[in-house]
Length: 597
Image (cartoon, rainbow, N blue to C red; front, side):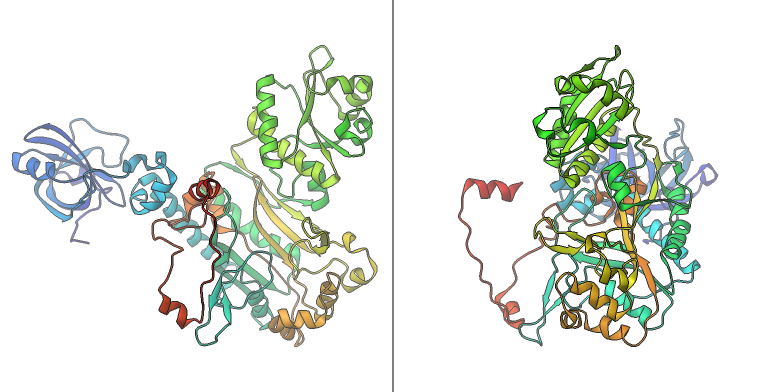
């Protein structure tokens, strides 16, 4: 503390005449003459203006580099020209003594502290400790701390008990790649960092605990996205015994809205109960299982009226349409939107317009002319409307339409209320699906979900028609969390896994603790795990999740500040019985470019 009397955001007019001691970073010095200068002193809390009025003090300050830490002892006085933009703008401090606490040894900084967000991202990540000195960047981390504290308080108020679960555990087939940790005392065996505390929290329910939560670290070896940090992330993990889907909804609908209202950048938010949308309806109306309800546009089916219009890509395929009323976009803007959709979806967008005279023009208009009246009636078109179209098999046409809907709303005014938080629940997910890569039957979401209809559904229904008590919480088009009513009956669990080709012995081998625990009488239970990082990203109005993480990795899962991942010494490898055997890559220009991107 260096015995400071105040921080740099505390002094006010009532402190005029007091001798004070301040400590902080030397942010800036405006030199007026050899015996007059204005120094901005910054600490965690704010800034204070220091006025040097002697040649001795000016010489001392002029010799320092910016970002050195100093101690200032001086007298508070009222400023003649006040600064209403800062809390301490009515006063200034005239120093009698300045002491250097930590000298910055660099004449030039990697970037200007207060403009660090304008710097190259790699520079920001390498010098993150400097980036975090920027009040705008620091405030996001402060926000995170406050939100997490309020989440804990809210869960405690609902009688949830915070319990930490193991970080070193066993590898589990939960969808993403594990981070493996070699076991020194068990040659050839590995721990895995948990992708989620899924099995442990279910075991807690089987152990007799009624309501569990934790701010849980999760580790998944997957690629980065704007809304997903590579490597590790945190979630508000929770589980409830003797609970239904509605019990989980009731808790989160009570916990989250007050936090978004208190800290969010928007004044409007959905009121509970949040809208419930079945998965199949979400895909049909919004083209996505994480729909942004701020967007007024809806997806319509145009297959019956356009599949046989003579346009090649439509023939034998599903056709989906998005109608934008009173459209004002130019051809150049339309072309850009179509190009943006193709970048995201890999699919083409087709379009036409109904002009002010009621004529179909532009895009694929010539293929629609003969069906003009039927198309207008089927899609409910009015003069001035714009129609964007996707095609392909059902899933591809839906997903492309979802991308069109979002891109169109972001590209043109009038189709999206951006200043609010819109929550919804996506419910009734399919229990199974045909894997896009494998072409075989797979679990659609969490394999531990209870099928709707229980064992009877598994034994009598087409697997692709079985729905699960699986649900997602979505806000502004971002999936905040997935949850489910759990499959707590061993016989039902075995049958569920048999459908994807795994027998009872496989279930016992892969999930021995959970299977055995359930044979001793487990309660029905349900849970969910909202992503803390994504939640705070939405609350702060940030586009990148890295802005709300204190020390984030880059897009390639590298910590370029600490130099991780890194090689280790041979003796360390021997300790854990590992030998490195890496096939050398050919050095060519393509690989060099890929490494530097």
